[in-house]
Image (cartoon, rainbow, N blue to C red; front, side):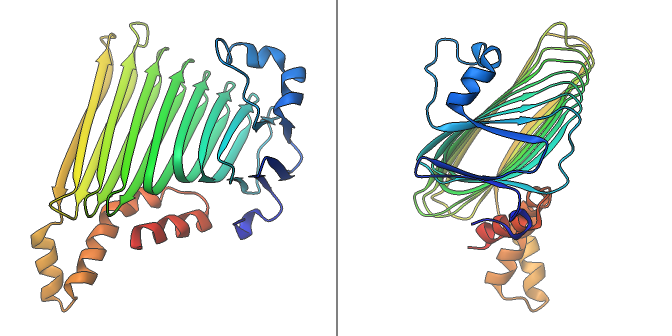
Length: 308
């Protein structure tokens, strides 16, 4: 499904084929072409790894600012997408993932990358940010899925903001694994992930913030919240900090709980049926994540996952 906002700006992977409608300022190459034209770029990324065959290389020219929403549809079983932003460029994408996917992001200095992600299956997101570069990724998923983030803040002023919402029912399982590595001073990161669990579903969150000794003046925050709608649902959470600098602001936390009975009772006393009142409380719990999505169609799709 191509969002209406992205009818003239999208990239589609399906059955091994790539279809693109790309605005000027963004270059899309097959991986074979990219290996030939940008060999140096790939040398440091494919050490001890075979070259992926299915995917594409997306290059954003320096100082390019995309004003038209750009959508990426991944409908293959597996896809490897390399994204490189030139200096002072901006790219905002909305991704719909069906199947396994790998994202490999490289942000030059003072570039900005934002992503809305509606995902299914397994996802690996790797990102390297140079000085002043920023990353913001907001994800939503339902059903069996596994999401891994590996982010390196490799320049002063680099910042990463990761947020996610997951909706689980019946016997579905979800895993989120995050590592943010602060390698330079004055870097910032924020993580906020929420889960809503029904039936016999299971979720697992494991996050780590790693701060090098040189990374003074770092700010790093991590939070995982889980709402259980069944006595049989299981949520496990393991936030973690490893800090080797002495001038740092950092915190981490996690919660696991049930629907607020007092809030539910209050809504029922106002004439709202219990089922609808429960739905309102769930929406209130999760909506702050979904509201961060930049594209209206992506927010609507993510909200529909919460209500289904």
